[in-house]
Image (cartoon, rainbow, N blue to C red; front, side, top):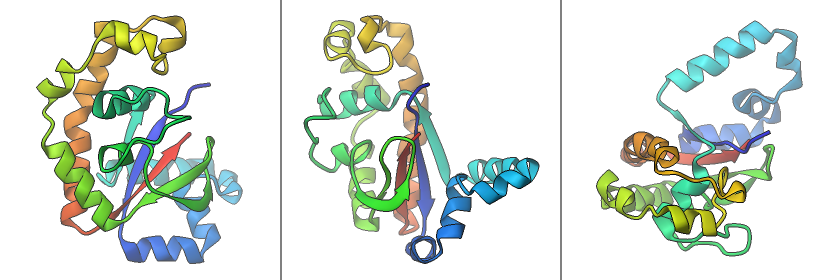
Length: 183
């Protein structure tokens, strides 16, 4: 089983609604057991949400992204400072459980700060920060424990990075919050 990171854009009003309605929150995050009675409808709802542009998955590349942005490899012992630390580790814990901990939320102000910080880092700059030896020494997930990071492995980070920047820019422009989940 692997750890994958996902992001959701929500308005502050939607967030308040999710907080006040546990059933709606369960459906939103796809962990409402009652929705398993109709798996086809659940699958359609998940696909629609993901196609909306308000959801982004970075898969198992979250740790590599965090290391490239912050230089911090040991995310379990040291919290990287905002705004770049907020991209993977940030936010306030919510009441909603995810597979690894709780869903976390970034406020609209935190989202704006992240968007501004990401705008200042190009794919080329991010690429220049990659070093196979550093990644393997820091045991960056998912390849670090095997000491198996290669240049090819990190390409997926550079592929999705522009989508991540755009995701935060659009959320900031709309005054939205961002929810982070590790599943």
